[in-house]
Image 1: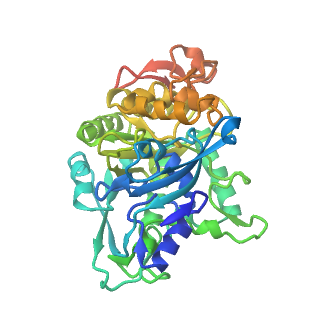
Image 2 (image 1 turned 180 degrees about the vertical axis):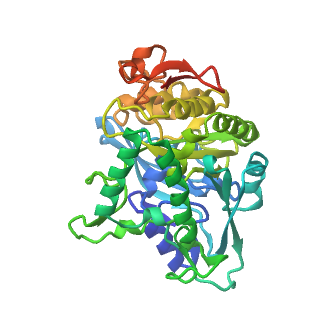
Image 3 (image 1 turned 45 degrees about the vertical axis):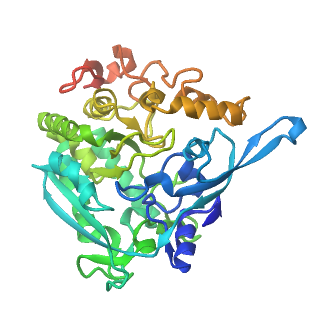
Length: 451
């Protein structure tokens, strides 16, 4: 199927379904454009199948001199050597005009969520993605359990017309979003750990009782497994269709209202190092369990499986993506009460375990030196020089991330609180509020703002 790059994922998978076809893997949120999800490497979650290799052709428009009409239209077929640069381009090669995707005959999936304690999680994490094609895991660390998603293909003749309408991607009453944020701010301001830790299991339980938004027939949940067609299960985003009701309802993260506001850190760790990383995370959790209540309140840590990609800026190894969401103040320089633990976790992942930061879910310090983690980066930069030698499609930020010019690190007063730097002195934290630059508790090479 060939689509223009502005097509939204939701419309693509629906159009494919009408032709009896399916896109085998995709991100969970269906509101992404095809050009955008490719540019950022958001190819979907699974260790099986082709990974990002379902992109079999692209048309890209790149700058050119006046003698060539200022632009060149490049057709990249499946065996074109530059396709591995264009698949994950960060937008710096030119304008992606069209994308051709390899689809499969429509199939069905069977989904079941199972909750267990986290005692063997480090071992299970390594094998779960191999056992279940679309499996993932959600880990609320403070609650010491894991929600395993068993999600596999089943015969197209299997009974079921299930639907994934994930709760967090639905339209929500604006008044509820605003009041929820006010309550969250009160808990954080008063550093009310007891209340925060009581709230966290409630959030997870609400999602669990509602089957996370899955239904067996599009309206009712009657029990697991939920069986449905691929296009009805693979992604969701019903708040894309929020009614035009003067913002009485909206997507939960809509910036036009003062609703939820959070940090979202995500990074991929090679499968071979995951067990040791989880063991270190547990050690950090055990040293200060209350520090993880905020993560639990954000529905825990999502573990997704990522297949190694041939793309020059794709994942060089099969990996697990750790996705963590937690409270962020609207006030610049306002510390998270447990910022020391949260920053130690991220520095441990990036520095000790060589994690690759997610391009859309991180703060500045995570991108320092990141290009060295891509073995084929030099090939990407060579294509970039040919396609856009004057850097028309580059920015100050892209030059920093690609290590062409400058650094993503900004050193100033309070920079570590906002994730602009890793602290090296107390002024980078918030000493006037009692936060000082100190070594990490488990990963002692970390430098974090501790209260």
